[in-house]
Image (tube, rainbow, N blue to C red):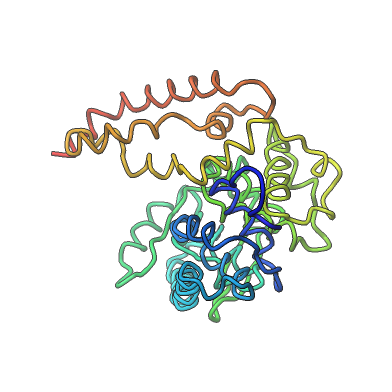
Length: 357
């Protein structure tokens, strides 16, 4: 896919999409863009964890020797080293929790990077683990005792923030995958694709890497993959998943030839793709987390400047209300989401302000 040429100058988000298209595969095609375009988009690729994947498409191109490409190459080599530490820690965390009778389920991170042609090119940050709600406090106390941990464990009470299915149901279909001599429990392929789509949308789609994860999950589906299981559920879940996969197809060239007709025929509303591409540049939800309103007393200027990022994104508002991705304007959903969050904040604000002091 050629990104430069006559016509309108591509946006940074369009450049990201073009550079990452197929980058997870064993032999991705060489990327085509100008040195100026690469220099413009390289910082965003590094900030959002997509640098190594982009390098895989640049290393056999004419741009491989440019400064921007070499910066991406440096990140690629760093990820190779960090992956060794990460995988060792994942195995140690599973071993530690099991020694206390806790059986966690891993999502994202290594659970999906192992399906990339070159797993080291997909960076893993936190170790995302889900445990039964009744074991959450025990697991949290155990993990606090880890000495010299390089990676934070993001511990979840069940799957309330990742799916509408119970921990017990997802556990019953889970699988074991060996890592550093330790069996790591991961979701079934059907459940993991569902969780990856849900997480991508719930976070406003701000990270292109998560759409690469969805692409990988779709392209590596086993022959026995049960699409009915993935797409079943209440409300608009099937619509959300189908639209996520269609986004991966349109933006990153994910191969959807083996998906059901209901997925291939998913119609994206006019607002959806622009909303995702905008978040790849603005990253509203990430910036919101770094400027919480509850810190207004300690950091008034920083907090006030960050208020614009607290306006809900179209994706976030849609997900929070359980609505489908229709052509209906998103403004009513965004207002509803903002009012609900404001009400919750007002309840928590007094305690949060006291804790600041």
